[in-house]
Amino acid sequence: MPRKIRELIADLEAAGFTNRGVKGSHHNFTHPRVTKPVAISGKLEDDARQSQETAVKRVIEESQL
Image (tube, rainbow, N blue to C red; front, side):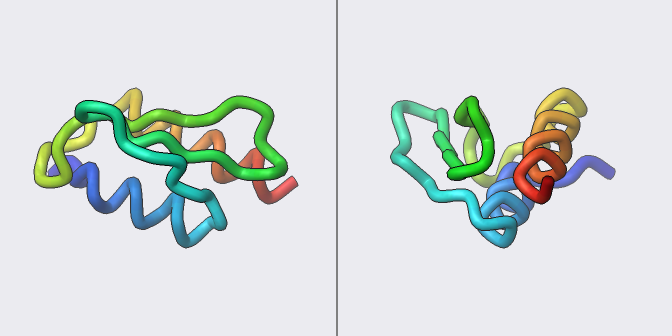
């Protein structure tokens, strides 16, 4: 079963990412150690796409280097 958008956002916040605002359905997050911001699109209750889960995993790993 796919995870929800709210779970991806919780993972980002737990890893130290800061929500720099929401524009439409895009939640934008930044981290001091990550060069590019990450945007998660969709409503909080929507199922996350595989590409979103992969992107979140990648930036969390990058922030821990």
